[in-house]
Every structure is written in structure tokens, then in C-alpha cells.
Amino acid sequence: MAEDAVIAYGSALDVYGKLHTIQNRVIYLTKKRVMSSFDFQEIKYQAVAIPLTLAAIDRETFGVKAVDRFGQQVLVTTLERTLVDILDRPYLRGSWESADKNR
Image (tube, rainbow, N blue to C red; front, side):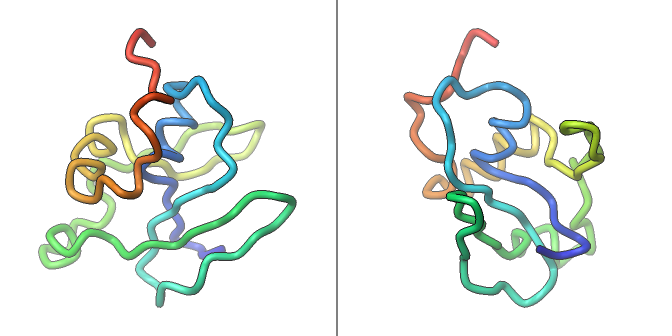
């Protein structure tokens, strides 16, 4: 996808096990030119630009950490950053109904 890809928004919630429905899309942040979304093995991959507020102050990696995902290290926004990002761009979160508030 991109060497600087960071899983974000509803996809980050999925990584942390905070959703109880299956997601069929992966949303990731990148500094690269945002390309069109594409499908691969029945999953839609959607690149989005890093929020302008963080890009303007050169803090693109604020609230980003590496996690193990099936033996692979991937970058993902922290839960705190994910919440703020979702409030900034709610259309990228997925449905609130799929969020597990008890986990």
C-alpha cells in the first residue's frame, strides 16, 4: 500500500478488537499521494491523507504505535488518537453500532 501506511479510524478499532462486526475495508493514513481505493481478496483498501492539523506541525506519527498483527508488525493509531480522528472525520469510522463499548 505505502511504506508509511498507518491503520486508522474504524480499521484501528478493529485491530484493537473493539468491533463486533466483520469489517470488509481497511482505512489507512499515508503522506503519499492518496490513491483511489482498491479491492484485494474481497477487502476494500482506502488511503486517506493525514489530518491537516498534524501535518501542519510535522506530527504525523503522533499517537501511532506498532502492534503485532498475525506475526507482522503494523502501524496503527492508538485508541486515543483513533477517537479524536473519528470525531474529526466521522464518515470514516463505520457504524457506531459495531463498536463494542465493553471491551
